[in-house]
Length: 215
Image (tube, rainbow, N blue to C red; front, side, top):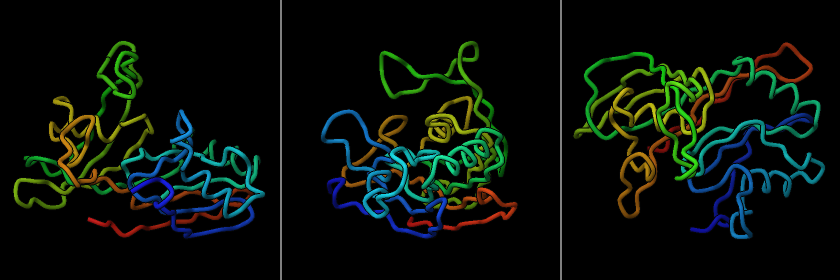
């Protein structure tokens, strides 16, 4: 299925921002090359032509599905970006991992960075890496796989994927993760952004959005 066939679902729209559900397989922002221009940001601008050129406030990996918030104005973008930078945005993800985790809950703190020789792969580096922090909760075990909820306290690239797969994390890659685990033919990565909480720009009103987990 090509990017043009993958469509976002609009959940909330006002003068400042848009909240959408992104399908797995769709980029959040344009990639490099003419074949990687289909993305969430482009579809939002197609729906609302008056939206700023770079509306994405945060990103989901192409293989991750779920909730994203995008800004329609520069002022809203600055306000929302500040909330993310100050870790005032609350996010929760659902995932299924390959393997069984013994503990019921915990917190992972690992420092990692981009491997420039193997982009976009991230590598553990306690010296030069940036710290990523994730809380997690085991929800169920079925047929040798573990369903978990991730609560990221930071927003590093591939944070949940690396924290799941690395031996210093949970040691169990997310099902279908082609970078840090194994993807079988016809399989998607089982990671979904299911909860998003933030404050509406220009107000003190906190809003919460939920997305049904599709797996």
